[in-house]
Length: 224
Image (cartoon, rainbow, N blue to C red; front, top):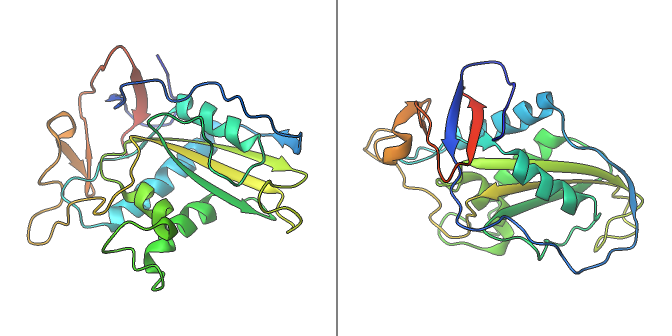
């Protein structure tokens, strides 16, 4: 059981997965890590709220509210500690977004991922493309869990010698990787096609008002 101390009423949320998130990697990485910095409760709330703020922009009928998962944060932190801009190869059933920069700014990273949809060269609105994969993961309607990690490094693999020292990684469940990532509301009301286990609506996002226990894995989170 995972307990969260965010201010507000706690509910239970089902974890949608059918296998472990990750397995031990056989890859080895030279030590570029300066320090590892797991996120505190305040930053967990900031990051979760920023994801939900962006998801509310989408006029969808089936967009789930997103919640923080400490288990996903552990796997994201592990990859951040590798100081590697390449996607990890030991993930199972989870999506992954990565951001590197000469400075740390978590909300800017999330906004930049979302803003891929506005890149005219990518034309992401009609089909999935690698250039907008971060955006697709953020607005994937069935994704309801996120966990992130941060590290400062001497350098970052695959972007060496460019002045990047900070890496921010988010892991998501379930993974999103196709278009359309959600059902456009059109003439229908928002939340009009929420799943039966998340039938309540809060500002355009579906959530479970009473909580669901799935295979004894329960997450306690805040209703925004």
